[in-house]
Image (tube, rainbow, N blue to C red):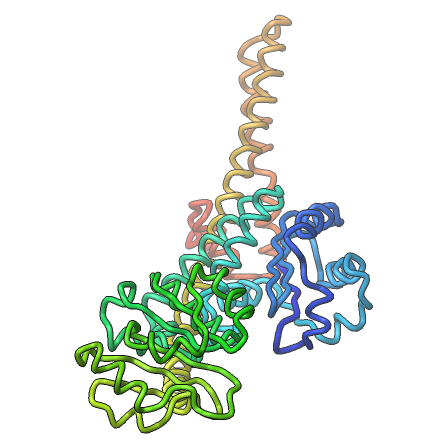
Length: 424
């Protein structure tokens, strides 16, 4: 059996091609069913996200050629085109790859945690489709434990590497009980939506969205279960918010020093955390002159992100060492299983030979043959049957003068190798 991995990702293929070979939840079920019918495929798992499509198969293969052809035919995409933008791994390199993917080491954002959940979902989908057996069950469960170990034993996911996430992480430093804080989001674009998602993940419930176009604010607010304000309402409502995060396309600041100063007086100097993710600025820089206002700009956050990326690179080196050790651990288990299978086969064959000869002997006794002759014949045939294989190997070892093999056979069969050497 050979383990193969075939895939394309953000490093090897443009978005247009990645879109063509991506699997939707509906198409994934039929894809797994189709892949299961391919000659040589014993097990399969398909991982499909916005940044990668990967097919893992276990079976009788020499290369990924047939899997590449299947992927091209399933999506009606030119096989050569996929081949030019794909990567292929087999055996231990395929094991290493899936562990790196699950641990976030192969992601667009180094160490991002979502990929582990996506790989788990892919595995569960395959298991429910009946394309997972013992080998993949062990491999993927081991992979999940490795990914968890990487995240526990290194700082690969400890630091923010996007300005949106960095803004939320900073807010946690200012306010320890973040879920209890009220937040005003100014703007309704992608950046604000990403910030909002991070805030929701942290348990924040009091969210308000203010935007020049109220309809867009309403659309975002519905996703977040948030309230809506117009920009005109911001000055009179500002004092109600502990955290203000702004990202609009305005050419002039929307929140000035005087507005914040008035809000702080109404808050009786309770601190206010403000983040300006806009270029040009949405919040006047003079706000930083106010004692209880903590203002961070996109440049401040970008500097934090760059430091954190460097920290993640160091953690990634530690993670690679963990994965190297865990690949070896898995391969050792795999080899031990193969040894167990060989022992099982050997014992089963011996038992079968014994049972067959005993049955013949009993039949001879029923037919009236002398018991002494039956026992002698049984012993003779059983001895010959069990000794045939080892005898052949011993002769081959002697013929090739393979001393190490002869020594190993002597030890295995409990022979007196010293006596043999004296006779020689």
